[in-house]
Image 1: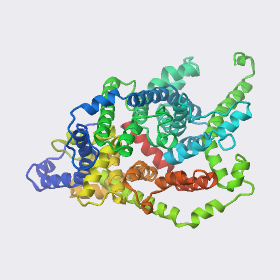
Image 2: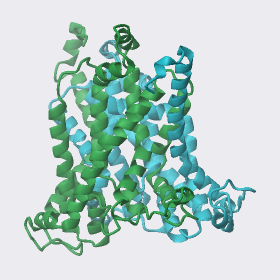
Image 3: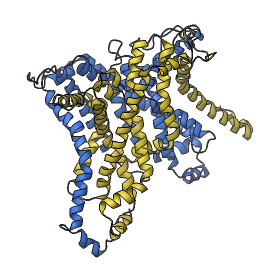
Length: 314
Length: 289
């Protein structure tokens, strides 16, 4: 950081408190922050605090909440098998994303690289699914996964190679894996883009120097490129985990959390109780749990990853 | 290839390039197949989709597209989506640049506290907040503020949940503008507002464009907020309408495909023109955030 040059004395005098400048500053601060603050307090902070209150009631949404049940909602959520399935599924999606989706994105970022002819084309195509809406993505893949080989493309391919049609979204054993494939299809381009930007920030000289010193491509990737991408990878992991926890639309349209809750996520679980069964107290408690999971993860993650970088600013 | 080193240098290089591209093209195929299949189905008749589902349409049938574009339903949804998107984007750009300016350029007691409050929003995304937010909307509606079953409800919630991320992005850009410029402006007699309006904002145009592009995409694609706020069919946005259309005509693969394809076109055109802004906004937010 360059130090800011000293402010001339005249200016300092002008900015002393009580002067017109200072009054003007205060006015600007208040007026400029006000719209953001009002909207944020009303639609983000107030709903959280109100949900904490509602979560202590057994409330169907008619009239005021009067049936106070203490922490019963929180207890029965933890005892609900379906909630535990949703939790497990979220964990599955997180782990699979970290093990497969992010490495795939990294591999593609390296393959597309800095100077490959046609890189603009590949980048544009790979990023396209991220721009398409979740509704469109879900419906497109519903068609592809249709169990009837005459309607679903994937089973047509399976049959072509002599296999039996698979019930992709109807089989509880594989449904989550199938949804994970769709999630990967939609989001790998975003992570690839992050890595590409990170790669561009690494000076080519460093890798060239390593090459001259006798490192091969694989060595120079693992020993030099990967450590230098530290900040980018940390961000990408963070966004991937937070995204995995809150998956909703894709799952809701493709399976509604089924069959027999096999693809339930925390968000579909909350939606079911809040908007289908109208158990608003219980649903609020689920929202509080999800919020706590996100906050705790964010804080722990920030603590864990706060370590000196090899080079700052990359 | 264990014995690759026995081959001549030029052949090694050609082979490696070949596999390089082969891998990339394989992924391109996986990305493109669902989209191509959708377009194929959209341009066939209902019977053709059944009899020859995976071939290119021959001849190309525009009937489905025409029947959708000929009715009022699609255009109504397009209009609703457009209204929401434009209002949300304008509001987000204005409100976020005002707040980001204060966080980047002004000093006051409690600034860090206020800024941390906004970053809390990043940990409370709309997918998690939807039920609590709905309860507040319902409360407001009962108090006479018409936000349920109204595009205003959608707009307010979308703006509120776009604040945290975009304030963070803009604050980053505003902080990068040299302090000398601000001092010089004040010496020349600029007010704080003058500096913000005449110097800072014009300099931050690329950043504002990125924020606008990201907000437009997010608002345009959002299904969850309209899903819980809107009931009346004439107020459906395009994603909501697309979902309902699929539910209603799910058996007519050709017609649904045509509808989905049509609803994807605006996004793809926008992506074509604004790719640079979208990309730079996303990576700026992520790398600095």
